[in-house]
Amino acid sequence: MTDTPGKSADILIIDDCKSDTMLMEEAIKSTSVASSVHVVHDAPSALKFLNKKEPYVDAPRPDLILLDLQMPDFDGHEFLRVVKTDPLFLSIPIIILTTSTDPEDIAECYRLHANCFIQKPVNFIKFKKVVSVITDFWFGIATLPPKH
Figure (cartoon, rainbow, N blue to C red):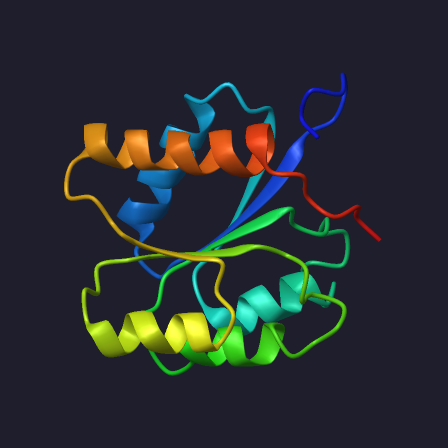
């Protein structure tokens, strides 16, 4: 997908921790994937983004979502429950990127059709490597469904 000149991957980051989102953005920028990164800090805003509701009426359909689990009020599990039952969004890969190591969280995410569960690395170099592997796989090896 990203081998096509002029094409760019749209990545949506959903995480309430601003320092983590800044690290993710920086790590994505350092990869070879041409991408547009969009950040929201809670699940309700992410649903507005996906459904093109104010203030996201011009939001692109993401090619990939990086989702934190541990957010206040409406957590990542609930977001997965909503998005992975909506035919419009079912095909968007969702990568869980979280500090949780709880086996129940892992099992529940896969039951809710997350595409991958990754524990957030604790330092920037490891974080950058994880993000690089994610983008290399999803935009260099995997074939994503067409946008509609």
